[in-house]
Length: 236
Image (cartoon, rainbow, N blue to C red; front, top):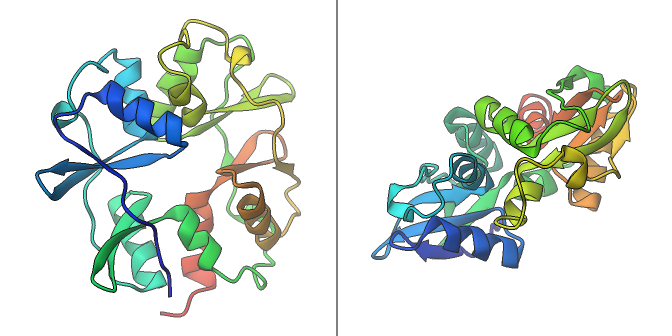
């Protein structure tokens, strides 16, 4: 059975900058927002990027965009269904009398990928890309407006990848008007379209990354993997 993690939280009266600093310092992607003792939402890397882009980081978390609190049953299939239906990457479960949080990454680690022999091209899609000389602000806008967290840096060839986390963790020192190549990660996990999905999933777990690039200009994310697993690998 899936265990999940202890919840890390902050009060709604804290500033958005406080939450961003806390996430960057502790290398976490999301933080629960409390009103008194009740969790009212999740503040994630995606919400942080939105408020950085629109220069709203001095607002309090009570005024911030938050992801909803979704409580799920302690069942892998139900957890994935709740994630997909609600378009979120984390849900809450009750475990031994305590509320815990379960993320995409927790789910992927619980799945047996040994029988996922389909080619990764079955679930990959054309990626939204930026050139190496595009501004970081442009990459951030693409992420916010399209609900993605990873954008390959591509111009005739693959130069690297930039993620929402790369931008958020460097705030406020990072200048959004600088070129993407100042912050992109040049070492990219890239595979051919023939690579088995199971191999990609296991490598993503091992490397602790959030996506794989396929044939230089396509992408597979954690969400794509759990959707495939629900259809093909998990018995309800």
